Amino acid sequence: MRVPAFAGTTSSNPKLNVDQTSLTIIMTIDDIRDNFALLDEWDDRYRYVIELGRTLEPLPDAEHSAANKVNGCASQVWLSRSVSHGTDGNPVLHFVGDSDAHIVRGLIAILLTLYSDKSARDILGTDALKVFAELGLSEHLTPQRSNGVRAMVERIRRDASETLAAAS
Image (cartoon, rainbow, N blue to C red; front, side):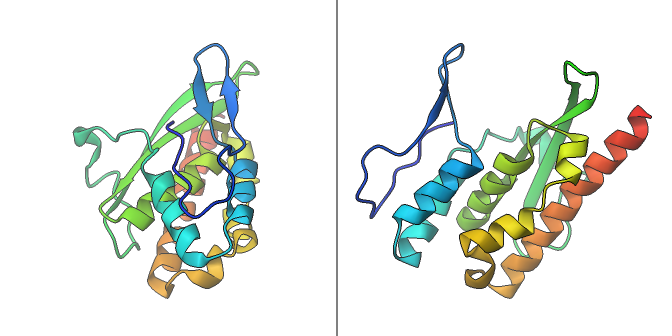
């Protein structure tokens, strides 16, 4: 994951976690919260969300399929999942997503920070809409984008439920 530029911030050193084995920068939801807190203006926060979208893992062309398309979004949105198993044997879901809209790609990045590489049970126990409200995004998104976020969350939670059911 690339480090997003922070237009309008006063801090040149955003808080980052670095995995020393792969030297990959890992952005957590707490990092996103902290960076949001540094930005006073909503224009800057929108730019930050767009920058987060630029950090998304690329979605292969073949994954831009009808099966991966998220219904209920005004923009084109695709989410693809793969499943592995954690050390405890429980299913872990990895998501890759894409959109034709820059701001939506950023919203996907926030959702994947919450949900990707988590166990199916953890996914079902995570309330992304609450996090979006804490960030102030709920009140600053258009109704269409809010509906799209809900559709993406429902899709991810459905994927987790299906994965759990298949593992039983």
